[in-house]
Image 1 (tube, rainbow, N blue to C red):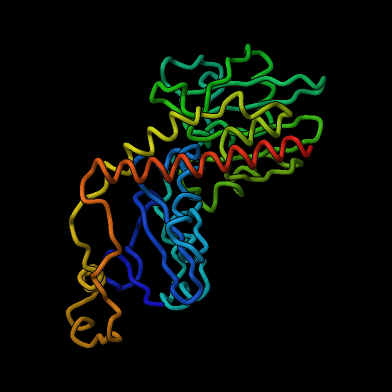
Image 2 (cartoon, one colour):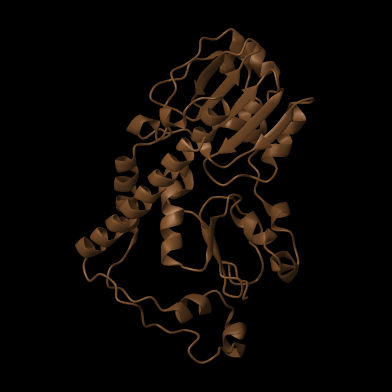
Length: 320
């Protein structure tokens, strides 16, 4: 497996953030991991359909989202050793996101239409309440259990859908706090900083703090409610994926994998590199000739996978 960085195959950049995107391909184990995309990286509801659809196009491959971004690549077997350094130690941390908000900020009502964080609490009496905020999750959750005392004096909010009710402002993170069980479940929509969970654990002594990757739907499920309360409608997911994917594709343009790989090399490496015959084949399987044809093919794929997901969910519900 050849390891290279966009900066020129000379190791990791001096400082980098979790944003952007990347692809890890291991031809030996048939592993594909990736993250990125203007919509996909912030929308677990879109990834829920997109990932299995990609899997259909890569039969025999293990397709997965890199939940920690480039850190997942670094933790992949053999990568850290080949690079000679730990990329997690080079992450460009944003200190502002790790500073707890003030009590006044915690009590300030969310300003419409902004939405960033959803917290769900199961109180000692068994009642469940939801609270929405317009700033990033770390500032609330690093406040510690005292956050719950502040929330007791604040009326609960209406529960938003995971797509922000189609208004363009959707939750980017949240947590479910089970007070009787002293358990806290965290999630973020985008790539997760590897230090995030540990920072929150330090702020919540005596609590069991864990993380999941299934966004607001899992948060609602953990609270004992039907995730359908917040699930983005199927037709909207398909329509948004159609726009996202077709806008990003260049129909009819040939992709030269050899040129792509060589541009990551230094001049010396390019001169010394040798590749097996046929390694960089540029012929492609038949593809749609026009954007309209491509959109129809993609629509059929998304609808087929969505139908199968709905059927599996129905069988799972009937078996409970």
